[in-house]
Each structure stands twice: as structure tokens, then as C-alpha cells.
Amino acid sequence: MSFRKILVGIFMAGIICCGIGAGVTFQEYSSFKYMGEKRIGSNKIAEKTLTENLYTDKTKKLNTSFIAYNNENDNIELKTSKSVPKDKIQIKVRYDADNVKDIHIDKNLYNDDEYIGDDIYIDDDYDENSMDNVALENMTQTDESESAQKNPTSQEFFISAVGRMSDIEYVLSYKDEILKNIKERKIYNYVYPQIISVEITVNPENKNLMKI
Image (cartoon, rainbow, N blue to C red; front, side, top):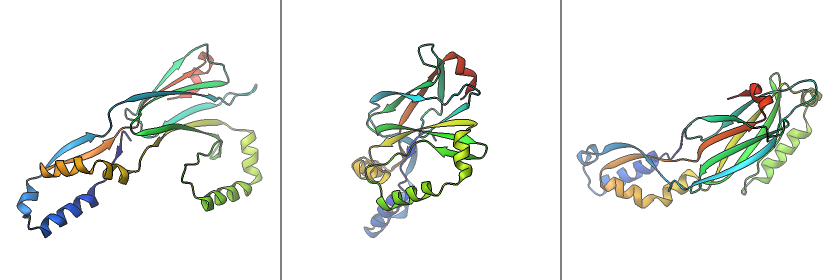
């Protein structure tokens, strides 16, 4: 998905209902024009580089893949450098600082159809009850999963942006702009870019293991 999109259908329905209540005719609404996408944010680009462990052992090397959520260009660039150790990987993320609070990376190890999570991100407003459920699920993992963790066959990195606001908060923050557009009889699909680009750098010996 290229952008985070603000769904304003309910918001628009409320505006239309208010307009009808105020005596606005249907013909006036029929004159509205769809103007396409309108970006939110000032395009203030920030950059963060993270170094992660690359799972390796003496007997095998794991195929490695990447998923970047809310990546504007849906593109991940792969580079090599001898300065990166063989058991490390560098992930450089460029993002819109107005829309993103932080960048987070999860890594999962897979064995056949099973995976073993390597990290859990906890947001500021996490639910203690839900975290208790997560802990309970972790305690009830089977012996097969523990065996799979010792013998993974592949690994996957998930790159995601921690947004500054929710969709509703964006609507409320930009309500004046939205109302101004409605007065002008213009309807936009309001979008706010988060991750602009992702650059992966690995040791040259690991290049053929990367699935980009």
C-alpha cells in the first residue's frame, strides 16, 4: 500500500445530511468534483538507520525477505558493503517526519510453515489484558515450535512506521482544510505518506540470500 488513506465517507455523509437539513439542494451536491489524492504533511523527510542481527550458522545460511508497510514507492533497494559484518544487516528508512513518530523492525524466523516471532512492539496505549493473553500464548507454545526455533529455514524482516496520529485525529486536525474544500465543491482522497524509501545494505557474501 503506497499511502495511509483517510476514509472520510462517514464524515462526508454527516456534512451532506447537515446540508440537506439546512435546505441545500441535491443539485448543489451533484456539482461536486472529485479531485484525486491530496497529500497531508510538509514532506519534511527524516532518516533512520538500524542495524539488525542476521541469523547465520556454520552449516547453513537463511534466505531473507523484507516487508515494508506503508511504503510510498513500494520499493526496497538492496546494496552491498564490506563494512557490514556477515552476521549483520543495515536498514536505512527515509520517512515523512510530520506523519511518523518512529520506525520499528520486527524479525521472524521460519521453519516450513511455522514462524517464531523475534520481537513484539508495544505501543504507548497497550492493553494490559491483551498483553496477558500474548504472554499466555507464549507459555503454551508446543515442543514442535521450540524445535523449529532451533532449526529455522528462513527469516523475514517487517519494517513499519509508528504514526503520529490515527486516521480520525488526522480528519479532526485537517477539518478546516476539508471544510474549505467542500465549500469549493471539491472532494479529495486525503492521504498521508509515511515511509518514503527503504535501503538494505548487507555484506557482499550475503547478497544472493536476499529476496527483494
